[in-house]
Length: 275
Image (tube, rainbow, N blue to C red; front, side):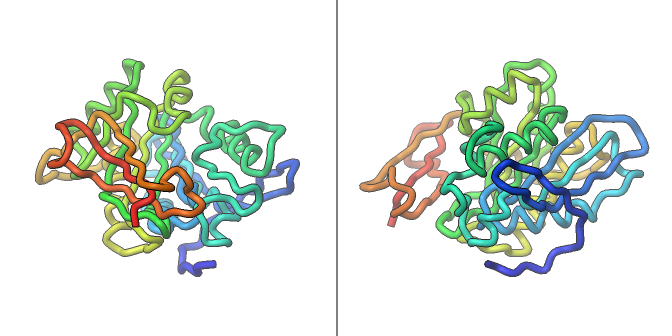
C-alpha cells in the first residue's frame, strides 16, 4: 500500500452486509444557505492525486466561505487503495462502473449503493476527482454529460465560460453509464482527471483543487475569483480505439490521450491496451 501524508479528517462507517467499511468523511455547513455538494475521490484506489486533493479541499474551506453544505469523501475504494489497485480486490469490481450499486450484491455493489443513498441522492452536485491510475497516462480534462435539465445546463454553461481547464469533454452520450441516471434525478455531475501512472505530483493536486474551486463557484457554493488565460478545447464526442487484447483490462495497460490533429474536430480518443 502506498503511504501518503494526508491532513487529518474525520471518518464515517458504512455498515454493509458484507462487512463494515471505515471511510474518511467530513462536511462543512456554510453560514449562508445554498446547495448540497458531494466531493469524492479514490473511486479508483490507485489514483492518488485526487485523494490528496480532496483531503486538502476540506482544509481549504470554512463556513464563512461556503454557501450550503459541502461533503468530502476522499477515499471511497478503501480496499483498492490498500491493495494499490483501481478495482476492489474483494470482488474484482471497479466502483465507478458499479454506481449506483445495489443493496443485495457483492461488497462493491453494496458500497456504491450506500454512497448513493447516503451522500449522492440528496445532493445537487457531485464532483468526482480522479488522478490517473498506475496503468494510465492521460491528458488532464474535465468531463461533463450534456444535461437535458435546464438548471444543470445553465451551470454547465457557466462552468464552460469560467474554467481554466485546457480540455473539457462535453459529451453527448453517457461516458459513465450512470450519467443519464444522475441527470434524470437533476444531479449535476463533474468528473475531473489530472495525473497519471499512480503519481501524486504537486502540480496535479493544485490543478484539481483549482478546478474544484471554479466548479463550486459556478454552482454558487463558494465565492472564487480567477481569470483564465484561454478558453478550453471542448470535445463533444468520445471514440474508443482498441488495440489487440485491448478489451482485456486485466492483461493490458490503459492509456488515455486527446489526439486532436489525427481525428475530426470535436472528437476525443480513449485508447486502451497500448504498449
